[in-house]
Amino acid sequence: MKVGVLGSGVVAQVIAAGFAKHGHEVMIGSRDPEKLAEWSAQNPKASRGTFAQAAQFGEAIVIAVKGNVASSALMLAGAQSLAGKPVLDACNPIADAPPVNGVLKFFTGPNESLMEHLQREFPDAHFVKFFSSVGNMQMINPEFAEGRPTMFICGNNDAAKKTAAGFLDQFGWETADMGGVEAARAIEPLCMLWCIPGFLRNEWTHAFKLLRK
Image (cartoon, rainbow, N blue to C red; front, top):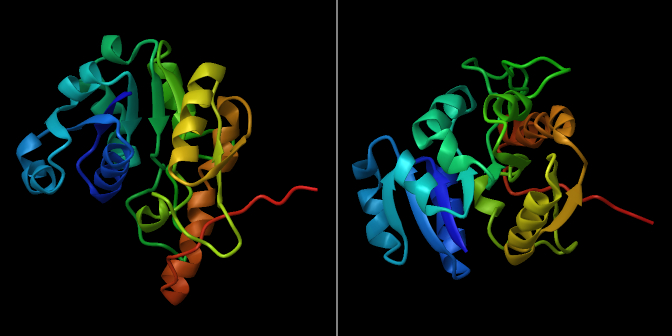
């Protein structure tokens, strides 16, 4: 599949490289594509461009930027280029404030989520929460003695969630579908929980696992 990855930070770079590793055609997009020159040299099977070019290129889109610029990045990508496509949302609404006793601050409240805001702003795109509750070092084919970790997803479009689950399977994850977009209110704060051991004890190599009977 052709995948457009919006973002030039470490998370976007890791996800884009993961898609390329698994044989997908990848274009990573940035406001300033020159920022990705070194990444492109290390990943010759992928291409780079602007947000708009990456969105036009991709049959599926990944948005992996700071939460407070997600809306503007998607605007630059272009609503028409997002319409009808899975938009895999790896963003979290982290506020520009230091953690308190290891707990991050969010700029959203408990009865709202960033993804809900984005879905309302771009109603023709099919948002799916994706890779928002783990660090970039464990995203692509992690190895744990307990088996595959669990990635929680949600969204309003079943076909888009099926696409996301297929990617996660390739990347070595099991998928737990939590339902509609409102479930992002519960999934996004898992980022806070995941980060606490890191901030308190410099432990960044864990992941969540859902156990079932």
